[in-house]
Image (cartoon, one colour):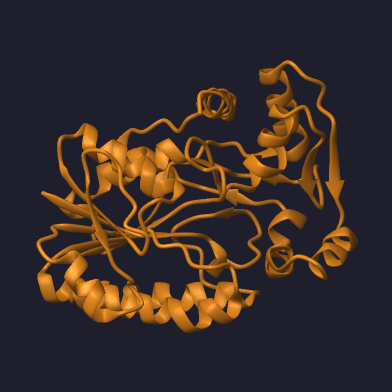
Amino acid sequence: MKHTILGAGGSIGNALTYEILKSKESVRLVSRSNYSITGAESFKADISSYEETLNSVKGSDIVYLLAGIPYDRKIWTELWPKIMKNVIDACKNVGAKLIFFDNVYMYGKVEGKMTEETPYFPNSIKGEIRATIANMLNVEMRHNNLQAIIARSADFYGPYASNTSVLYFLAIDKMMKNKKAQWLVDDTKIHSYTYTLDCAKALNLLWNKKECYQQVWHLPTYNPAITGKVFINLIAKELGVEPNYLVLKKWMLILAGLFDKTVFESFEMIYQSEYDYQFDSTKFNNYFNFKPTSYEAGIRDTIEFFKGK
């Protein structure tokens, strides 16, 4: 089987590549930078171009859309629908199956747990864009034009996630460097986080089950969700340090956003930290008899991974 990862080099892409390679399957890594991992084929392409997307997936059996683009609503508005259309059309052209790694922005603010049945009710521009591209793929699945899966994750943490995990760069990394950790808005609200290696294992299970296609799956995530204060204490306990941290209030983020584009772009998603954020993966856990990694074990292994880098 030929597995092609579009958007290679990111947190989940790296974890998935190593997971697939352990299964002795063939992996092609597609990126604009020609990113490489020993044992996998590298392919340089820009998937905002249909021709390059098509060339990158030729010969593929399974295609994973794991692309990350700059965190800018204008760029997202322009590129995400184009990328999704290119990937859908290319996979249909070559007869490849598609697994789209998605987030939860399209759900908006949810009372209670997010499940695969949660309706799309975005309350942000980025959420509206994610709803648009998810619906593009949903239409293809509903009409059986393409064998595909939407695999959703909560905010994630774990090995390889040094640049894309808020939990890592606000808390774990700072505390590893004996600095004061930070938490967003309210440390008393519960928040789910998905472990990167669980994501990789789950994606490697989903592709091989034909009955799992034409569905949305929430990737395995430990429950119950815990508060920011508990997260900080778990990290501190593992590192053997005091749980010193600062809660970044909304007014601080507004001020910081005047000088930092990433903070400015992140502000519309701040509701995810103002309210409880509960991600439910019962469907996946039960179907595959999968036990998600506990936060204690995940934090321990994440720290060990980055200490060894």
